[in-house]
Length: 52
Image (tube, rainbow, N blue to C red; front, top):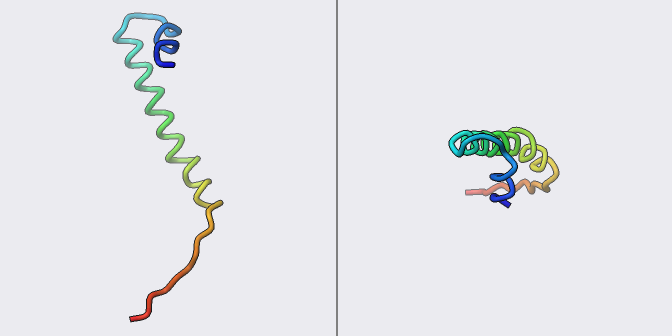
């Protein structure tokens, strides 16, 4: 998969690496900002209390 992305991108190796790192950072940001909070609302949260 990585080699397919590497061959698809134009330019020298350093530019490809920068673009792939940028895409990876954008993907992580989208997951943290949108996907994980949305999926947290779908999970069942049990309320529990601990009495001393």
